[in-house]
Length: 170
Image: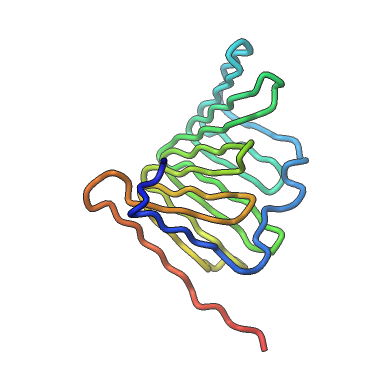
């Protein structure tokens, strides 16, 4: 299992509808970079140098991004690495998810985002943090809005979370 069970914390980021923007997956993927290397035989494309990937409201920035394709040429995984790679996505609930890490792996088939090494996940509404998590490793299910964080295998690896109180509408 990817996460150590004793350190696993599962959070439901909100009890409201937190699903990803409904039409993101139907939008074209746009990629900008300083250079690219395409290997059609292996189904791998690597982009380097100030890479920006966008699909609808999803945006990924990194020093290097590798796309891994299925036999049918559909993107299966996006691996982003950098000093701090970043991910952002707007949700149907008008909230935003923002993430940073030295390595990110987005699995398009499973709708999961794995963040490792200085991982940070934030949920924001109107530009203000609702939830923040910092950990050596974070897994975020982009479809269900569920996050799991752990301290990694290092002794003393800890997670930090901050949950802002929300105003209850009367």
